[in-house]
Length: 200
Image (cartoon, rainbow, N blue to C red; front, side, top):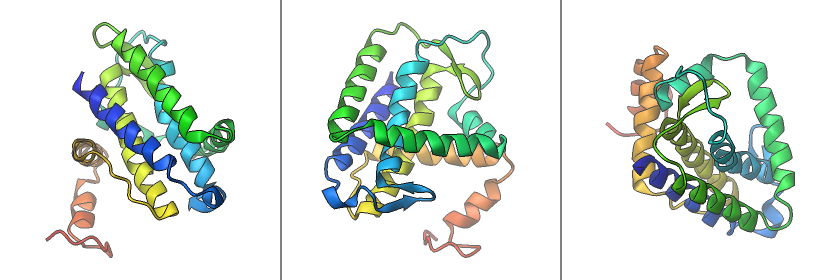
């Protein structure tokens, strides 16, 4: 499936960046409460959950797109986001002394699981049942956004695939529309409301 290729290509860009992180940068502040190690751990969970959720069939289809998943995530209880932050810290520690090798192994396991999967199963996720292909697109969002966060934190270029970036732009804009924030997204992308981004 094309969504799988896009997600896996983004994952490979992520692990390539992880392999370039200087030894003295792992404790550097990265994003919110996360240092670089915790941000890498959280981002690696995009691969881990895609692999693990594939073995968790859902009884019903509740979310019909990656945008619906993101829109639903924006509205959930904030305590869920605190738990996500904690899991990122734990995942960072679990990566050990060779994080890039560990993440590359995770990607290989996911690649094999996808190759062995027939059709497009409906899987259970934290926010409800959805098609696996749509869940992979949510993981592409995570990988693209957080690989860019990581690149800024460690002063490296992310070298993300253009196809993944383009897809994430579409998904985020669709999610903004679903949450009634489409015009806010337009204003941010056109350098209004204090945004430093200049497009128009």
